[in-house]
Image 1 (cartoon, helix red, strand yellow):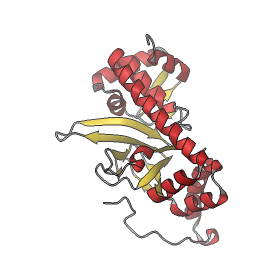
Image 2 (image 1 turned 30 degrees about the vertical axis):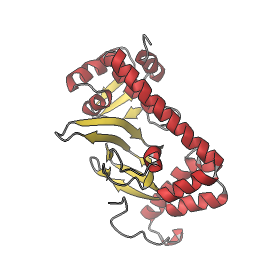
Image 3 (image 1 turned 45 degrees about the vertical axis):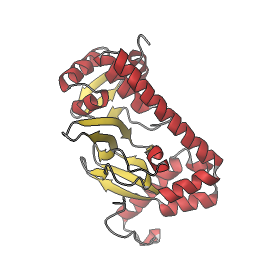
Image 4 (image 1 turned 90 degrees about the vertical axis):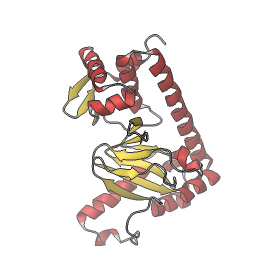
Amino acid sequence: MQMQPTHHRQRSIAPELLQPAQRRRSASLESFLESSSWFAGLTAEEQARVQADTYERPYPAGAMACHRGDPADHWLGAIEGMVKVDTASACGRAITFAGVPAGSWFGEGAVLKTEPRQYSVVALKESRVAFVPRDTFLWLLARNPSFSRYVIDQLNARCGYYVGLVHNFRLHEAAARVAFCLAELFHRQLYPSTDRTLGLSQEEVGRLSGLSRQNTNRALRELADAGMLAMEYGAIQILDLEGLRQFAHIGD
């Protein structure tokens, strides 16, 4: 099943004919594209095609934006909110690969393959997701060296994240594992606009770091006592990002 809206895409409407809420939403998608680092390197023709082909969809917390097993027909961007990339075993055990905060693009590896998507994308909180069709993504990749460089950097950074994740999980204790997973949400290449207040529950932090809820709670309290973060209801505020990064790599 392709990831398309449940209704046909409407034709463009002149901004002056839109209701105020519609104008704000259209401007928001346009602003999201224009603020993306790769967009400035496109030609006027390429920018116009991206703007014409890209659409967005809103998702309430807990809603599925992409299903595992679907064709990877779109490159994805988190306009607002936060989504997670995860999967579940046949017995229902869930594994979260990454949290994706607003301002980030993801899924380029899946788009480059012809196999079904190997993960699901779920809204952690109320979110809006941008969809760039695969044909448009590949068209940019084939003709624009600047965009190609950006995609290579994305793939390289994502590979580095997973190498670091395995290294961290095998060599470090719970607090360092949690510190690594939280600090990586501020990766300059992958997640350039992350807010210092993360809308993550302790359960989600545990799934990111591969820990039980009890061990996650203990680790978060250790990091909070060290002044690196503060726990709020349904959220975590990062107080000392550099300290968190250093703590994640103690003993490396």
